[in-house]
Structure formats: structure tokens, C-alpha cells
Length: 208
Image (cartoon, rainbow, N blue to C red; front, top):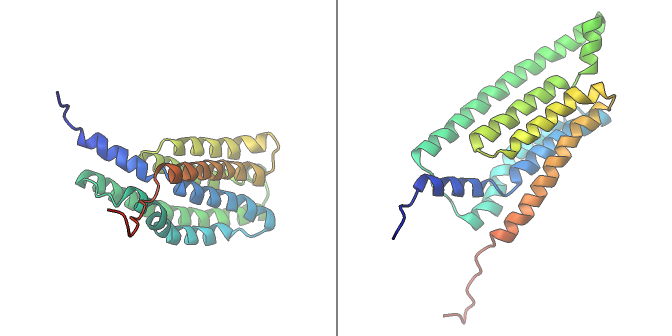
């Protein structure tokens, strides 16, 4: 007796396989870690540089590592519309992030000129706004890409930026820690992906 093929289930498995190469984890982990390192060495624009490099190199990495192993998958119209909504969301998100970043910059200047209770609170939780923005992006990725581990990354980041100051942990450490976790997970996934999906072996000249 044959069982009907659930095309949606097969498509979802193919889609999840496409995102099990760890490349997205590695890229985002590098960005989060760059924020902590940039804060320590006094290079706050380091994240922007790495973001530009990551956005430009991610498609090339997928083309070089992922597509030769799992193939170029053509998804259903519903899945394609979901991907377009993902792009629209992140365009809006990054526009809002830039505007909020400019507003935070002027807010910090104003608070430093007139220090008060709010200023001391802002200084203590200085990384919280950035952590919240990154956590929103990670949660959005988990939702749109249907990759649940990014919810965990978002939770770790929020735990760090709000719990770290209360425990007296240096902001560079509690912001960098989730990035290290993401890098380690991404490296594990990449190694497992390369072992699971090997490149097709070329036929030797004498093979039939």
C-alpha cells in the first residue's frame, strides 16, 4: 500500500536542510562577538564593517558550500512569498535600527552633559538597547526561517545584556558570550553538514 506524498513536509525538510550548514550561525556569531571586541578595543564601527562583509559574502558561501551538496531547490510560491516578506521585514528593521542608533547617540550625549538618575541607569545598561535590537533580529530569523535555535540565541543575548550589569559582569564579556556560543554551534553544524552532504564524486575516465 502506497502512502500519499506530503509535498509540504518534503519541502520543509529540504528548506531546513538548506539552513543546517551553520553559515548563518557563524556569520551572526561573528557580528555579535565583534560588538564586544569593538567595545573593548574602541572600534565601535567594527560591527558595521563585518556586517557589510557578511551580507556580501553569505550568498557566495552558500553557492560554494551548500548548493553543490543539496542542490538548488526551487520552493513553492508560498515559500517564495515568505522569503520576500522576510526581506521586506529586514529592510524595515535595519532602517529603524539606523534611526534608533542615531537617536541613542544624541541621547547619550545629552545625558553625559546633564547626568542624572536616568543617565546612571543608561550607563549601567548601555548595551541593552543594542542587545534588544539584535535579539529581535534573531527571533525574526527563527520565525521566518523556521530555525528554532535562533530563539535560544535571542534569549541568551537578552539574559546577558539585562542580567550581566546586575551581576557586575563587564559588558564586553556578557555581549560577546552569546556570539561565542553561536560560533561554536555554527562550526559544529558546518562540520556535520560537510560530513552528511558530501560532494558528488566525479566519475573516473575508466568507469562505466
